[in-house]
Image (tube, rainbow, N blue to C red):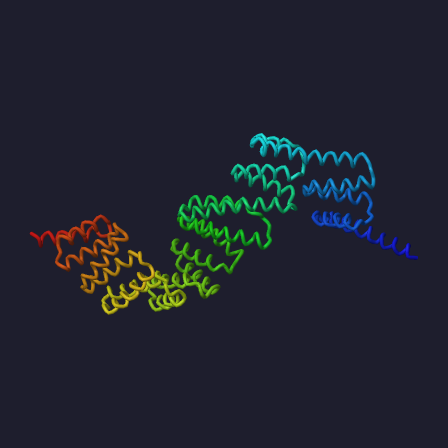
Amino acid sequence: MKVVIFLLIGYIFTNSYADSLFILKSNEDYLRVIELADDAIKKSIKLDHTFFKSASESALKIDEFDKSIKYLKKAISLQDNKSYRDEWDRIVRMRKDIEIALKKYQEQGDYLGAVNDLKALNFPNCGLVDYSIGKLHQQEEDYKSALSSFKKAVQINPYREKYRLSMNFIIGKFISDGDEYYSMRDFSSANSQYMFAFSNLSKDDNEIDLQKKIALQFKISKALYFLKEYSESEKMLNQLLSLDDNHFEAFKLIGDVQKRLDKRELALKNYLKAIDVNQSYEKAYLAVGQIYFSKNNIDKSLEYLEKAIDLKKDYAKAYETIGVIYQNAGDGGNSKEYTKSIYYYEQAITYDRRNYKVMARLSSVYNNLLNFDLSKKYAKDCIKVKRNYPDAYYELGIAEKGLGNRIAAMEAFKSAKKSSKWRKIALYEIDLIKKELN
């Protein structure tokens, strides 16, 4: 009775493994086939030679030559026949031919010879050949050729993880190079690297690949923005937002693009969307405040600008914009507002000590308040940072004139008149001083 039970259990195990292999192979789950075959060998499950022949075929499908040879050897031990031995010889020869070609590079340094030998191999449906060529290109830093070969390897054999990892590594290298160019403000080169990487991204829809695609689209959009290719940047951002409608930075950037394209209502809409997604995103509040300022909606502008400062206490750009609002109000006749503009400009300089534009604006405000000493100070501070800034020279000219230093004033106006913005009024001031000196 016990013998019958053991035989029955053995029969169930045998059929279970055979059935599982058939299902896995039908579903092209070759990695699981290998696990199943290894498990069968480890547990000494008694299986038919066809099981191991089938496992060998699956291993060969994913270029696991060693495993394929191992299972074929097991099949031969169960059923020795010529076709199995011929197949065993063929796989061993394939492995050896690839190794010989690679040794030509490793031992002789013959890069082109090794590549040509690998290309000459006629191994249909063998991704390992293209993968090996890709590794040679990678060693020689021919990354475009390496990527091309790795892509072919993945297309032939999408089941081998190291092929995909190698492809993704090269794509990541182009992105990294793009980031380096971007940090140097070489946006054209950065965009070229990004676009090459983007065109070679995996078309898979899994979450990891999708997030990589979105991140790269954002980098491309920023590069295009700085290249002033606004329409292309807008197009890329719309594609991005169709994939991720919670990307608050993309909403902000598309707002910036639309602002450049003079689509201010659309820009405002997207800035507000950025805030809806992330209510702590201070850059979006600044952008909304600037849009409302341009529409002369001062109350709304100040509301959003102050919120930006609440979120980021050292937000120099927000202080500067509020300072401009109050300076404009002072220029419009409400001189009491100059005091407020001074406060915000000084805060801006506190957090951005090289903000020469704010220094020139402070000089202008103090000139309007007839405080020529402070005006002169800020104009000179500005020139120390930005030597040829014409606004500062004009304000310096006014300050020197107010202090009675006519020659110094005339020299400052001469520097200011080099700019088309100040030429006419600077020449006017120079003529006045000449008349006074005569």
